[in-house]
Length: 323
Length: 303
Image (cartoon, rainbow over all chains, first blue to last red):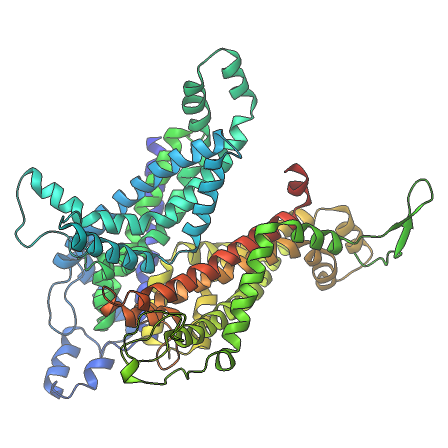
């Protein structure tokens, strides 16, 4: 198992190295870092020249690439173009917030999917099965940005009708952040709507998948054996069927993470949450290529790390994979 | 596939039975799928209405009428979806937005399916190194953060026209078709009828085009259908955050984005375009499901 992880980590390093080249030359080929600034009247030619010198923009592209990689390794992605602000402090703060959101949303989605998938698979053709099937079709068809807006409308209406502030519709914490236990309550009140909006598609995808694999497993010989041994239904379904049915879900979750991260761009913009998505949105709006490239690098690293975790989880669940 | 079958045949007792082709069987199975049929009717109605927006609605897309601003949706007032802050009929605006959204999605489905089929067919038929290279490219595109990439591309390259957005979307959405077609080709190329065709001296092009491809059409069509709904969701999201179809061309995501500022009081500005997206995607997904069942004879018998 350890060798397997080490192998994968070693391989990931080269993938990341390739990613730096793809990102740098890709972005360089479609954009001119100074494009926006050149047309701004309040930037003098001298100021522009200073920017060019600072980022070595007159050197050949391959040299610029070298400087960029050096900045990334030694100076944590360096600074942005226009204001020379360090990129990493804001990016790392965003990263923590987004990882928190994604992990909570995915855990919620997996938990819901296991409940729905197990019950729908166990009671095939029941009303619950049909109901959740229709719901999952709606889950596939609903645009998450629209769902998020509807949640916001409902939350505000609820507040106006009852005067109870159950949830917040923007930000990550209240202005006067409470301390201790109330801090977590406050954070949860801010996160609940984004989590709901972000997990809709995942719940639909995972529960459909789990239902299908439950149906496959539940008619297999070893489940029949377990029943024949006289085990109670609970043990049969949870220990024998679910464990095997949930196995392929690990892969599905891993593949789906890209979609979830794309979703955070929209969700964080709507709920004004200071995360990776909002960081990226702002970087694109100001067309700061250095922030964009840093964001892409961090995202690529995240994707690899999550991929690695998925493989490890798979190894834990399925002893055959371990080599 | 190409052998002409007699239009009538005789069964074992010599009685004439009407010949039913694979296509007829498929059609009858699809029509038996009730949800898919209802969905098809609703979707057709929406598409026809969107294409004939100027004939259906008495209001022009940009017709301002300030005295009628911010009206709620009523049936008797003639504004079924209400009006926006400039008094423009919202039903009309949603119809026009739907037209753009459907145009983009259909274009994506066609382009992505053609690209994906081509790549999948090459990878699956020739195998070896070609397969390896093409599939690594496919893997790469799959793990890319799609929405982020599209936002970057539309920022630096895009003009925000529907066709432009459609091309960019297709450049990411061909991967699933490619994988499906590749898998089909890999298994079909070892079958006897393909080997017979190769031994008979058929060129690779002819084997692919006449012998293998017709047998993979089912999964391709199902996937193309589902691609439409994926494309609608992504295009709407892009247009919503301002990186997709840009004004003055209307799109559903854009309408939601414009209505967002006053959504607490004028709820209809956000609700109706969104419901339109949900309805279109839902019907398409049901149709895709019906097609899948109808094309997969095995499954139809089981249920």
